Image (tube, rainbow, N blue to C red):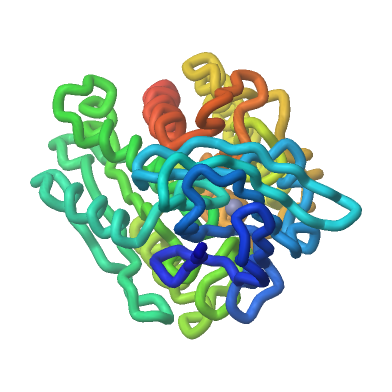
Length: 380
Ligand SMILES: [Zn+2]
């Protein structure tokens, strides 16, 4: 007797048939009020020492079918360690089949290592215990969750602190972005870390570790509770349907921005890269020089980051000001960037067991602070 369930924080799957472990058929549920889907996360019970074969029947209709090519699914039994298992994508049938042979009764299967809202609450609580950190709830989401922002640093006398913004998980299925946030906060709150200490002298950080709590809890790929893609809502956020952006944007306008990093995951490209703001109307050479310096520094500091592969650079004037990075770069004239991490792996340094993993996300975040340290005096 096998069971498949997903009625938990971040869960997403619909069972078509689950009679035998060797022939399980499932479908991914769409984000509420939206056509997007790709995130899946479910529990399988009762398949110990069976050759499990799970076919996602609607994989070909997912938001990014390219994401299934060369993809390996994440599986855990202890909910701590998530390893990769082989998958087969049949582009003609539009199906993705996941194979593994569990040694345990219970297996958890996900698109990427999940980051639950419970873990988010722990992250906010533990950061909030530091006397250096202020925790703000900027407002509430549609489902009635807090939109959390952490503030720290920049309280030294005689300096005007740079205003550093870092936000993650506008797209809730991109859980790597919140694993990155854990690495960031770990390092910033380490009172013995010389880079963190220097940064906190020079700058005040405004950190939103999860821009989309409702989508995260609902098991969405890309949208909030109302089915809005938050990274297309920055030009004109609506307090009713995109309160997350509405409140964060309001805080940015009140406080100002000298540096902005928006953290994401990319379904298809197996690399870490940064997308800039080259197409915004008021772009300056100074902004572009800073962008180039930041990316070059990060590539030198961390072999998991590179500048060769990424999105095509926007032509001048072709920006989309509904996107966070473009909107921030245009409105504050500052360095604004989108960091993309892979769902798959870093093809230049693959890890056969774990693929791109929470541990590597955390390391990349630490390096992002080193790169920030290299440019901080020239911001703003
Ligand atoms: Zn994204």
